[in-house]
Length: 403
Ligand code: AMP
Ligand code: MG
Image (cartoon, rainbow, N blue to C red):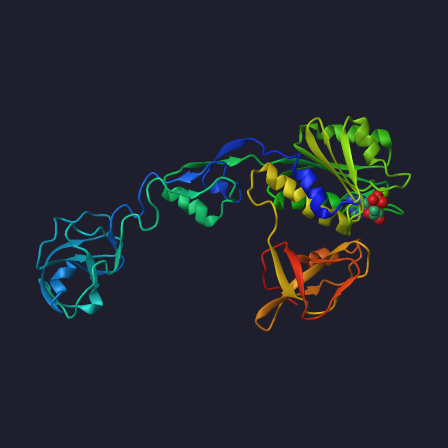
C-alpha cells in the first residue's frame, strides 16, 4: 500500500501546467499569475505628505522653534508652485507632493497659524510625516511572482501599476462522471432502491473551488459499454474524474472501461481512511481519476489528490492546503489500520483554536463533511486525547457559525 504522500508524488510527477490567457484585471481575482508583476515606476512616484499641515525645511527648526512665512498652498493632484526657501513654509495636504527644498511636514494641529505666518513650537526631524519616493515599490521590483493566486490586494496592485490585463493560467476543464445503477440524478424522483446522486454535485463544486471549470457527464449505470461510451463524451476536458465502481465488486467496471478507452492506469491502494483504492491514469495524455463512491470518500480523495493536480495545472507554486497543529478539544480516535483523515471543526476554546470531531465519521455520512473546517490526520490505531496536539489540513477560511 502506498502512503498518501507517495501517491500524490506519483500523480504530480505526471502533471504539467496548462497554457495561459490574458484576462481583465478584476477577472484575475482567484486566478494564478503566469507572469511576474513588475513595476515600471516608483511608488509613491515623489515624496509626499502623509498629513494635512505645512511643508517646511527641518533645519529652520534647529533652534527649537521657528517663525515661518507661508508662501504657497499645495493640494493633492497639483504641483508645488515653486521651491521652498529658508524661513518659508507651504500649506500642504495629504498626498500632495513636497516642494523642492522641503524635507518635513508639521501637522496643522501642531502650529499656530495666522494666515501669512506660522509658529512652529519645537524642533522637527527631517523626514517627519513625509512618505519618501519609492517607499512602497521601486522601479524594477518584482512585486508578485508567477504562480501566486490573485487576491483583492493583487488586483489593486495590478491597477496601480497600470496593468489593464493580467496573464494567468487557463482553468482546467474537468469532466465529472458518476457511475451506479442506484443513482437518481437531481430532478428525478428516486425509484425503488435508488439514492440521490450526490457526487456529481459535490465534485463539481470542489472543481470550482479549486479554480477549475466543471462539466457534468451525468450518471451512467454499471454497464461496461455504457461507461465506455460516456467516458468518450469527456474527451474535450483536460481532466476526467469518475466516482464509484473502482473497488473489487462484480459491478466495479470503471477501471476496465478506462482501459478499453485506451487509458494507461496506475491503480493504488492508498493507506488512508476514508478512501479505498483510487485509480489514477492517463487517457490520451490527460489525467484521469477514478474516485471511490461513498460521498465522503469521494470528497476526501478529491481533496488529497485531484485538487493538488488541478492547482499544479494552474501553475500554482503552493498546491497544498495550509496545515496547522492544534489541541484536540475531545478524544479524536482512529481505531483503524490506516491513517485517518477525520473531519473536524476548528472551534475556539477560550482564546485558541482546537479541533472537535464533526460527529459520526462513517464514509457515507455527508454531514461530517458539511461541518468540516479541516481534516485531522491521525495515525493508525491512535486516539488523540483532549489537550494533545493534532495536525489538521485546513479546508476553508474560519467563519463564526450559528450553533
Ligand atoms: P461503489 O464504490 O460503487 O461500491 O459505491 C460505494 C457507495 O457509494 C455505495 O453505497 C454507493 O451507493 C455510493 N455512491 C456511489 N456513487 C454515488 C453518488 N454519485 N452519490 C451518492 N452516493 C454514491
Ligand atoms: Mg457501485
